Length: 339
Image (tube, rainbow, N blue to C red; front, side, top):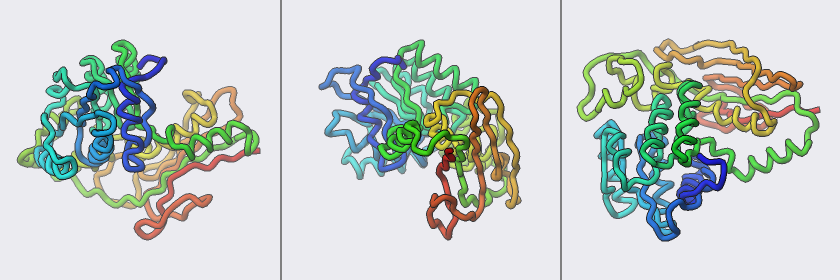
């Protein structure tokens, strides 16, 4: 991750140029470490959810950018088989290499770039291992499950001189870039408050039902660096977001995007003080992370406050932000208040 001229052919051309809108929307340029005619071989690790979008995005470049999806990796044999079939229908060929263990992918000298769409608790370690193996990396947000791991990932990128891009794709949205430029130019005067909103209709996730690991799931590989807990469906496939061992709740799921834009627009670093209030309300389930939360961020020497708010149920939209889904009340976005 050198500060100068990131390469690798515009990192698979802006990491697949928005990946169908939201998935990889505009990972910044990585013009080729390899020569202009050399084929770039990409591996995708984690094939559910975001991983499906990564597949579509990179496939969109396979012919015109001389890029090849060379490997798939997932700990669930069922998901791996589904994606192999999906890709064959899409591309007319099978992916050459598959693995359940990401280390097999990282040991492959023919792989140039790794896309990580794993659960949060794997993001930093996977990135560090990939850097050590000489691979460039696109890693989904959040970069890390905790602050320490994130710092280690940044150190690894610098130490091994690798290109590492984090999935805060709003940085490459022309509309958001323009909005940030307008705010910086003083369009609304001196900004004293910025609010980030994540009002999403989140239903109950259910209760843990610990039991035998389903056939085809390599659960020990999935747990990796996380605590050794018995298998439960709530610990896999999306519901891990709401367990502290694996995810970061709505703050790490949606808040990363809004907080990134606020800090970018206001030229802010690490806050000098934060306050948080909230809890898990409404549902009688085994979610651990808050579903209702208000967080304040203060910055020494700056006369402003950042506020991020989470709500889990049907809410009214605010400041024109929102959409009707599935009934009404999905509202994610930002409101800036100026003098």
